[in-house]
Length: 113
Image 1 (spheres, one colour):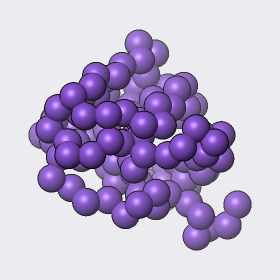
Image 2 (cartoon, helix red, strand yellow; image 1 turned 135 degrees about the horizontal axis):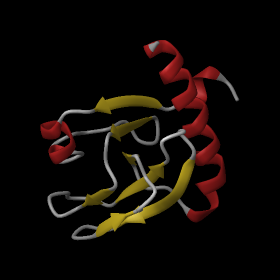
Image 3 (cartoon, rainbow, N blue to C red; image 1 turned 30 degrees about the vertical axis):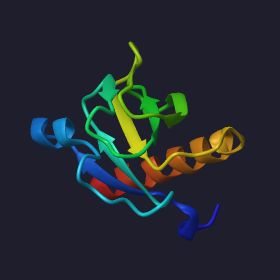
């Protein structure tokens, strides 16, 4: 996978950032994702559009991807340590998106160290 195919990860690791989530934000379609941590659940009550959601374990494995989460929804995963919110994806894109997200996360973590 080429570097230009990676997802830009935007950290949301304060309580206020996590509470706000994607509300009022404009993300580049499929090239950015908000990383909410620590976080096990999300809601879309304040969002105008559907999103995709990826739940991630403490060892940074993607546990579950919800490709399209509509407004006024709640999603959670009991094993999740963090959550990614991004633009919606199709069911056909789930595996490719998971690989992109995991590679992007590895690169993001290596830059942070």
